[in-house]
Image (cartoon, rainbow, N blue to C red; front, side):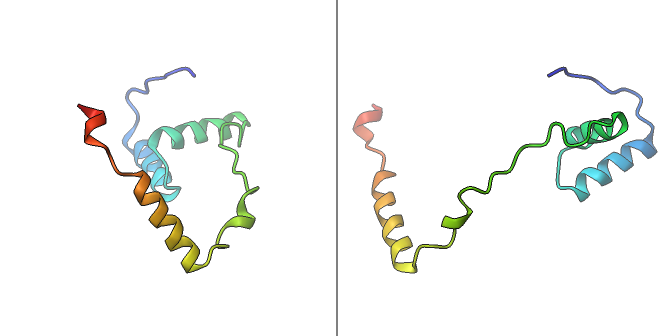
Length: 85
């Protein structure tokens, strides 16, 4: 992707971009790119695709199963100091 530097952005425009980024919980860069895409008629072109193919598995574990999983995972997260010498 091409990097572009924006100079001498009018304060009103800068505030509008900041407000847009804050409202959409995104970066200033993403807000500017979104505005440019809209202005050029390329909306939605660079947005990440959200996948929902694993949604059916969410919330399927019982409390006992989740606790068991966490317990087993905890043992795998131990660091062996001998390996890091």
